[in-house]
Image (spheres, rainbow, N blue to C red):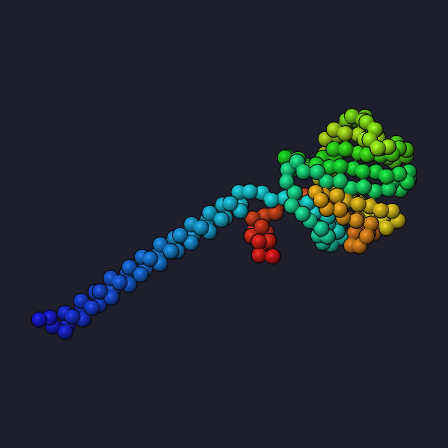
Length: 191
């Protein structure tokens, strides 16, 4: 027959063994969770995300933004202040991270109208269309101050934004592409 002392030791040993088994299960669970977090971090940090943004220069307030991918185009259309003629400028975000002027559509070539002896020129619907410009824009951002005197539109994918209305009018704005950091991508998942 076992003494009570031996019985207590055996019970303690069984309890210790079962608690070790529980700790082993917890360790495996923690390891799986850590591997999952590392996997998510690798995915989030390995792929760059870029945002096409319209920012108020005065205080860096983002007035509009949308995700943009390499080789996607956007445009803006306005009435030229001198010629009183419509102008459409088309841009592309290229694979090197630059914003390129690709096309310029104008109804005339008067004072202050965009024209360089680059690209190809053709007539489309009454516009002189200068194509294949592939010209990087200065500082990789468009800087402008939309007015409410004439319509001014911005186009991206299926969106049309009126720059000649609030909150854009009479503010100096810049149109640019910003890279979204991994941390910002994670916080955006929860917004």
